[in-house]
Length: 415
Picture 1 (cartoon, rainbow, N blue to C red):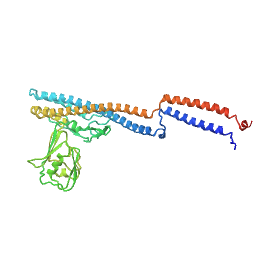
Picture 2 (cartoon, one colour):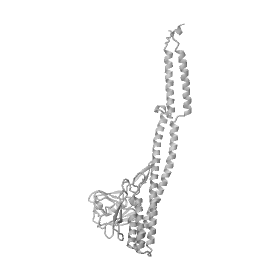
Picture 3 (cartoon, rainbow, N blue to C red):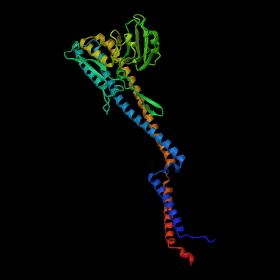
C-alpha cells in the first residue's frame, strides 16, 4: 500500500528542531550570563549538592572572619586604654615613692596630692571609655551605661569636695563569639576585674555553725550558680563553693565561725541570692532587693580594693601628711594593682594575636572554598562561547534549509 506524504511533515520537523536549538542556545546564554553551569538541580545533581554545601560553609567562614576582625578592633581600643592606665599608675607610683621618703614638707605633699587627684581623674576617664560605636568598653555586657560612677565628698586637708569613692555600674557577664567552627573567644570587659588592685576578702561575723538551709535555693558566686539543697549546713556550702569553678575560695572562720570568702585573683566579689535566702541568712549579703556588688551585709568586714581606692588612699594620705601609710600599705596596694593591670594587658594582647591568626586562617580558607565552588559550579567560558557559536551556525543553516523546503508542496511529488 503506498505511503501518504503530508506537506506539513517537513515544516513540523523543522519547527521542532528549531525550538530545540533555541532552548539549547538560551541555556548556554543563561550560563554565560550567570557564570554558572548549574541553572537547576537537574543540570548536575551531585555538583549542585556540593556547591550548596560549599557556599553554606563559605558564608560561615566569612562570618567568622568578620567576627574576628570586629573583636580585634575592640581589643585594640581596650588595650590602648589599659596601657595608658598603666602609664598613669606608674606616675602615681613615682609620686608615692617620692612622698614616702620623709624629707618632704606637708605643703610639698599637698602639692603632690593635687597631681595625684588629676591622675585619678585620668584613670577614671580611661575606665569610662567608650568605643567608636558609643558603647562602654569596661562595663561588661551593660555597654549602654557608664562603667563607673563617682562619689564626691569632703576630704581632710582639702577645702573643696574631692572624689571619695568610685562605684562599678556594669555586669560581670561575658560574651562568647564564634571565630571558627565551634571555637569561641570569651570577651570579658569587666571593669571591676580590670581596674581592681587586690584580692578581695570577706569576713562574715555571724556565727554559721547552726545554720541549715530550710529550702532548696540557688546562689550566685562570681557568676557561678550554685544549688543549695534543703538540709545543707555551712560546711556543705563551703564545699560547693570551692568546687564550683568560681575564682573564689570559701572557709569557716575559726574564731567567729562565720563564712569567709576570698577571691583567687584581683577582682571584686559578686554575690547574689538568685532564689531563696541562703547568703542573706548567713549575713553575707543584704536582702535580695539590694543588687551586687554593693549588697554586702553590714556586719561583713571587707579587705582588698580597686585601683581607684589605692589612688584615693594615696591622695588622702598626702593631704593628711601620713608618710607611714604612703610608704606602707598604699605603695603595696599600688604595686599589686599595677601588676594586675599588666597581666590583664598581656592577656588582652595574646587574645588580639590569636584573633589576627584567626583572620588570616579564615581568609585563606575562604579563598580555598571559593575555588571549590568555582570548580563545581562555574562555567568554562571558552567552551560555552564555542558551543554558542556552533548553535548559531546550526540555527542559521536550519533556517536557510527550511526556507528552501517551504516552497515544496504535494504537487511536486505528482509530476
